[in-house]
Amino acid sequence: MMKILNRNTLTKKKKDSQASMNEKLNVLRAGVLGSNDGILTVVGVLFSVAVATPNRFTIFIAGLADLIACAFSMASGEYASVSTQRDTEVETVRKEQALLNTNYEDELKSVQKYYISRGISPETSLEIAQDLLKKKPLETVIDVKYNLQLNEYLSPWSAAFSSLFSASLGGILPLAAMTLSPASLMWQATILAVCLSVSLTGLLSAKLGNGLVRLAVTRNLIVGIITMIIHYSLGILL
Image (cartoon, rainbow, N blue to C red):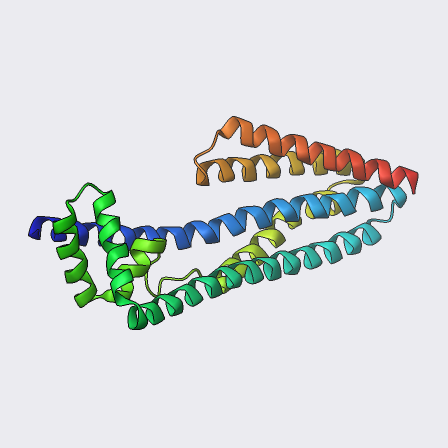
């Protein structure tokens, strides 16, 4: 039984490390999504306005206004989303604490069933469950039932600031290309900036999600090109 408990201690350390990694990945995910959204929304406005007017200052103000709106929209969305997740986790912990106080035997059985499902005999599983619930009842129950770590909640502020910064950074690239490049090259420069930017966000998203890099980059490129075509067409129609 001591070997099993030692193994559980090592597993706990790995989960703590995983929780920290999940926090970092969540912030990076928000950053990648924010950057991609910033690129596409800003270039959409730039293309529509640039077709309608040659005035570079008007194009710049329209793009800048959209960049700011997009950045704050993405940040507030991430904050709301992660806050909801955090609130759910906190409520789950509160509920399990109440169950430990009012229905201890069922909680004990839940922990025992967890170790039985991992190939440990019912008798030994019961001993492990009893020992763990004596030492750290709430931590054990939420780990076993929900794979949550006590007091290890995702930070909505980290996700929001990551999204705010990355959306701003992503939107700046096409905005700078359209407004700072020579007038004769502004379309080519903007198209190139968008293609490079969305390819980079596709690459990062694939790396973070262990996906196929080529597929992610191609998908982002297609979406970026379609976005430019649609908004260019809208600018002509208007």
